[in-house]
Length: 223
Image (cartoon, rainbow, N blue to C red; front, side, top):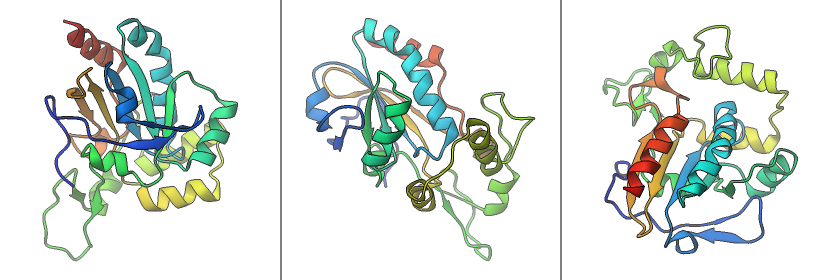
């Protein structure tokens, strides 16, 4: 996988099934008007579930600027449809259980180096398990304090009453280290703004762009 796409790069072609409407949606369907696309982990990630809700909250402001909001969830479409049937959001929700769109946009997936490897860590491409286990996060302020990322997931899933299904566990086993990316695409189909999760290392995992950052990017696009 190459580096994350940067402003000026063309957005890659994709076609994904929709989780809250019929049929599929492609880049060609969206081209012509600007859109914000968030590429998330699966429903097993409580921080991603929260970010989808946060995007829904700022969607009216983005719509007012002529920008559509799209969320791509790393979950099979049937599972995503069931979840969002009971927790609907006004965003366009697409399902990508294989993370193909994440890869096309160059969003990294972190690999763990073997314990006996002499290769140096190269975050966000690779890291050592010890470094990941030493990370501490509390991006939403809901935890008792800075917490190891996997423990943080478990605590928030318990708080939410979210029980992982067999499908969720299978996605997590395959794509647990997938990072999240946000991209603002202009009307011509070019990247205008990009944000990749955890650029500073594992202790910045699950910190996503704020509403203010996203709206500032939208305002810059209008100028």
